[in-house]
Image (cartoon, rainbow, N blue to C red; front, side, top):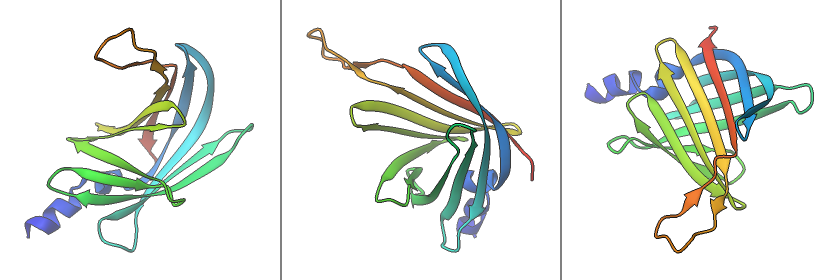
Length: 154
């Protein structure tokens, strides 16, 4: 009984539907561009798996990201975003916010989805490692931000 209740109230289940918004794209704190976005979440035919689809309606570079979000460990709130090309990103759920932190080709990225009231906020930041000055801590720039506040349309 508790498994069925948990599954119906999971973060991805709360996201099911079609969402729309405008992604604001910033470079070094300056608004550089914007693009209309449609984000669609549906249940896949497998248990604990959701279709996680983002369409970027850009005149310059339209694209669709057809990913799968899969529950990996319910007790620890761990999910996996499967990009369907051999790349899988690990995600961590805290309350109504799903986080991912990863690095590719020397670029450090953070990604999050947050359900806030009737909005779903999607953000991605990216930057590079700052050369250490003999410190024990590695610092990273935050050069770019992509942020969209999505509203459910159906």
